[in-house]
Image 1 (cartoon, helix red, strand yellow):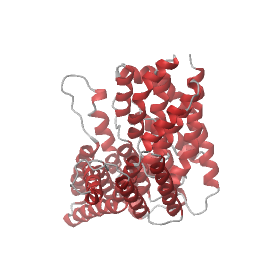
Image 2 (cartoon, one colour):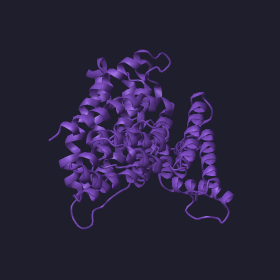
Image 3 (tube, one colour):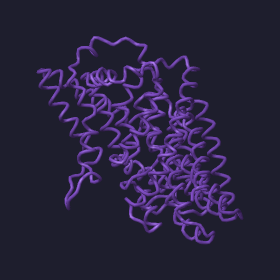
Length: 455
């Protein structure tokens, strides 16, 4: 195991070096992942393909096939639909109309744009209760909140960073990590959310807002190349788009908040997923556009813009997500999770030391794999027995670990939410992850202190 972990460490360092040097990230991540998968097979591992072809060499490519299938049918389809919707909103002028209306109520904050920016964090966390997919929520906010933030004077990198931070707490009854933690604690999902997650997340959110306010203001003041849209003049097309179009970019959020099991009662609630809500909104937008424009060629051009947006999302975002998935598969195949578990068992620390160790392990595992679910589902089952051995409540371990898993995801350059939002906004995912790393680390330390002194 030590030799396999050494290979994983060396390959990961090499991949990080080449990406920092500006080499093609899809090629680097996919290549590094295939190297680690090949090393795993040479060392006697079983690989990560769900169905073996019968030949180890072919199984390497079978893993890539399975990753493509899973990402294209799930998060990939959602990202492509959202990217197409965003492109259509830009083409028909709906984004410009939303900006013109959205900036009026907060025009008083133009002198304090970063105050408006950090106020988005609790808003996004409330929306996450209706949209449990981090990537889905991030992309919806890119379509609605992002244009307003950059128009009032916030840089693109700050806007994307803050939108990603809206997903840093994986909480709410609809969250898979919440369901797993509640199951391990033998609690109801809603009870776990209301009594445990919400109080801790509220305290951490206020601390996050304060830190991000000063960090963003300081870092943006040092930037010279990322000119905010507030310094640009509106185009004639922006001014010409009907104000009624402003409702269209937020229509997916309205649908998801209305048709959501969390806010409905009865035996058969009407529930929409993100992709379906986006498709409905796209159809309504096209119908609206056709009625207003009364020009078939104009409508056709809008649809072409939508397809082009989907194609750009595939070539830049989804390929990067697939490459990151192959990289994470290579780390898992070489025993990253097993190695971290052995390390944690070998440390003879007390309760606070063990808690700190586990939070650090799960945090950095989420950064490496770009997934909060993978790290928490691996470490979570160990905690109830460990807590009983130490004589402390299991929730004092599980709750911060569960939140740390999603906090690490927010600082991972290969996380789906980071790649997707950065790709649509046109910024570097590495820059977003680097911007979010320090606040997430500080918040993790604060979380340990709160849990240590909580009664």
